[in-house]
Length: 279
Image (cartoon, rainbow, N blue to C red; front, side, top):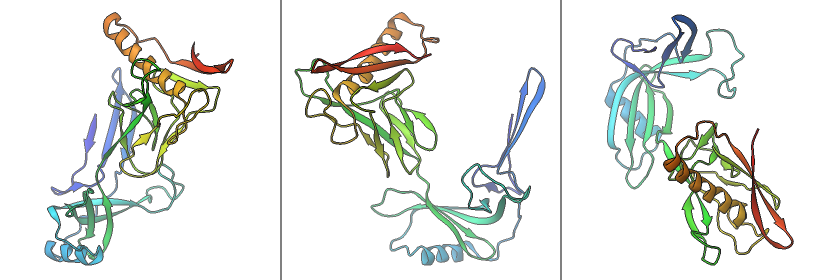
């Protein structure tokens, strides 16, 4: 059961939740997220004044598009410690403010901005891009045979490290949350071990697209973008496609686990995949 907190008709930006976990009739866990004492502050500035402060402090050069505003309580961490880490006094981890919460876009720009202006002091407390971007992982594979040019396709069921571990959908998409996103051709069902070197590719900015690239040669010829061989990309992609087709027609798969796929160079020929079950 989850309770979302409201105060005098106001919401809380950042979602304050109190969660109770009951198992077989027994309460086994209580978890509070952003559950802090509300300020219940009465506005000392008007909405128009807050918007004027926002335009001045953020140096907006054009009129906001799709502007919305509400009064909400927001909480900010009181230390500079990493997310999920707090070593301060009990109950003092958040500082709560009542704010005018603005959301808007600007002409010819992609971000949807969120801004918090304190209803008492008029301070611009925060301004950030509130969009949730979806990155895509793509790479080159042979569509049917190695005599054809490589075709760039989306890589589904691939693990991406970006503020945690995420698995791409069938279209290669994942929720990009900013910063660095990396993949090593490991996924929900298959992990690649390449004797030529560990596969890797990264993204560092919005929208988080990761390009595994294409290769100009065989054996240990790595892609120019990313760092992967033809054998590694083709083994991962086509084994996942074969697994999806087999599961569709044969069913099952709940206990199949993950498998290690080794691609090896042998006697100067293009290295080939060898599949092992991961314990």
